[in-house]
Amino acid sequence: MSIFEQMEQHDHEQLVFCHDETTGLKAIIGIHDTTLGPALGGTRMWAYADEASAVRDVLRLSRGMTYKAAAAGLNLGGGKAVIIGDAKKMKSEMLFRSYGRFVQTLGGRYITAEDVGTTVQDMEWARMETDSVVGISRSLGGSGDPSPFTALGVFEGIKASVNWQTGSDSLEGKKITVQGVGHVGIHLVKMLADAGAKVFITDIDQDNLRKTSELVPSAEYVDPDAIYDVDCDIYAPCALGATVNDETIERLKCSIIAGSANNTLDREDHAQALADRGILYAPDYVVNAGGLINVANELEGYNAQRSTERVQAIYDITTRIFQIARDEGITTLQAANTLAERRIAGVAKIKDTFVGNRLNRYR
Ligand code: NAD
Image (cartoon, rainbow, N blue to C red; front, side, top):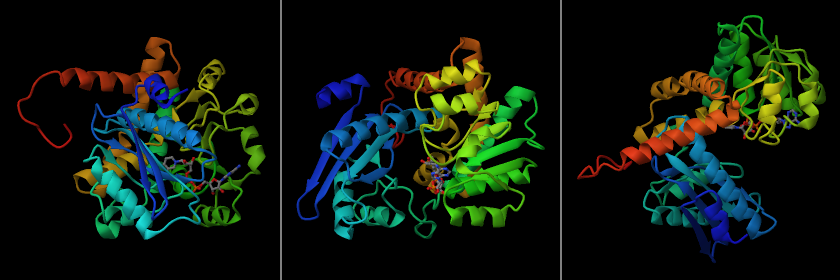
């Protein structure tokens, strides 16, 4: 498929190729949809096998950001960027400053942040050349590590799911498995245990397991592969994608799945398979939006309290999605997509009205 055909497929607005010979920069910025506001999404640095893979990835990821921001109620569009190269070998101040200058040429249409393969340091270099960077350190007035906010959003999504099934959002005595106790998982385990849940944890990283056990001594260790067989109420995937697949669905004993891992479902039709088994799936991109909500808060002048309150709204958003799924007879994943698409269509419609002058920088 040609690049324009790929862009037509999901209605992408813009793809920007950036090249700088001296630093070796090869970057592609994807802007999917800016109906709601500037496209915000991280910059991924990855040694792609070929350019076609990088294009496919940036198109897929930028579209995902449109849905995530829209469902989260943010005034942001969807964008993402990739830098082609080995993050361990190619990084330099000049590479990221050069990249930052290209971001600046987009005049605020795209706002970047860190992602897989990039760090706060990289973004601070980019920020020397562009205003369109978020996710910088607290010491520079930024929002710092997003992980505790992502964990809070997942916690709210879990409570909303339990409430939907039982009429009470108490986690007292609930058995919850947390797969992956890295940046997000460790905070989630603490919140769940504090709320009275019985938490089972697994990880392949001994260091992360040790840190979590020190923080939450009551958390019970389970072997990585045995996590799918634990008799539990809730499964919270916080490690890898595609852990809900043809093989694991048969094994899962939970009645709720809600976690931070992106692309939890191996295929979209697994949402129906879960529904058929009576398992309530809280869509990943809805419950893991806390980090995005937190980072987006930098655009208004960062305030941790405001950020916390906005992340807590994931409870109501998750409930709304369950209502749409029930009322319209669709899966919760389809309901999340519907919620996002309706919000975008609604904002596109009200923008038909001519307002004379620009109201603020988001228009
Ligand atoms: P992380 O790398 O800090 O933690 C992931 C943990 O999973 C690690 O401890 C790793 O050892 C463990 N793990 C890897 N393979 C495993 C396996 N097979 N079984 C058990 N454990 C395994 O990552 P993170 O920042 O905590 O993010 C976790 C997930 O949430 C990722 O999918 C990420 O994309 C997603 N996410 C994170 C954020 C955020 O704010 N950090 C935001 C949105 C989504």
